[in-house]
Amino acid sequence: MKESEKNKFDIKNKKSLLILLLLIIIAAVIGYLGYQTYQLGKNKVALESQLVQTRARAGSAIRKLDGIIESLQQNLATTTTERNDFENKYNNEKNRMDSFSQQINTVQSTVGVLQKLSQTDSELLKKYSRVYFLNENYVPKTLIIIASKYTYDTQKDYLFYAETWPFLQGLLQSAEATSADMKIISAYRSFGAQSGLKASYKMVYGSGANAFSADQGYSEHQLGTTIDFTTSKVGATFTGFEKTSTYQWLLDNAYKYGFILSYPKDNKYYEFEPWHWRFVGRALAEKLHQEGKDFYDLDQREINQYLVSFFD
Image (cartoon, rainbow, N blue to C red; front, side, top):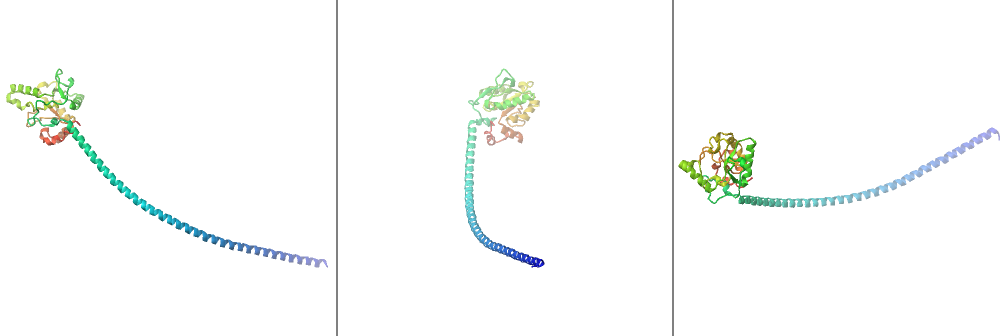
């Protein structure tokens, strides 16, 4: 065989081999692709099956959740109703207890008021100037001696009702702080002492003594809560006391300590006595001061309402 023919044969064989190899490769690729397609189809079926199962399980779970939610909603509704019922019962019970507590407080307050009234001498707010009468046996429960630095006659004992002394002491200390010249010249006087004083006035002034001096049993001094003030210069005659700064100080401040002027100008009992001041308690004294009224202008029933606050 010639060389050229041999070459042609070789080339032809190579081409045949290449074609065969190419066919084998194509067949392999087609087989592979077919296999992959088969697998994909198989997997798709499996996935669809799984998807169906998952949807079924999800549906079952959702139904269960719906059941749980519905149950919870029912329980919540029941709980809410029970809570509302309990709240209503609680509020009703609380209102009942509050009402009961208020009743107890009212009773306690009433008891406290009655106790205070039972411990407070009702005579202390009576109108005595020719109205009520104090018998010869009446003596304040407790009397104390007023410190001599506050009295006109330092050698004499001036007595005052002990429970009202703190109020008088406050007045005196306040006046002292403002350098007011204020001295006590008369305080508690017994039934007998008033009788003797009135008798001496009658000897000098006759029936004219009735214009400025009370009979025994009608004097506010017997209560032990009444004070006659003077100054170092005015002394025992009281002449011109109404023109002093001490009198003005009393007009401006005495009510703060529970004291009132018993016999102001134009009163219907006695002559104007600017030195004569009686303790009636802060509440009543402030009322009289604010309303511009006098103690003897009020009805006794209205005055009695302040007995419970007498020592406040």
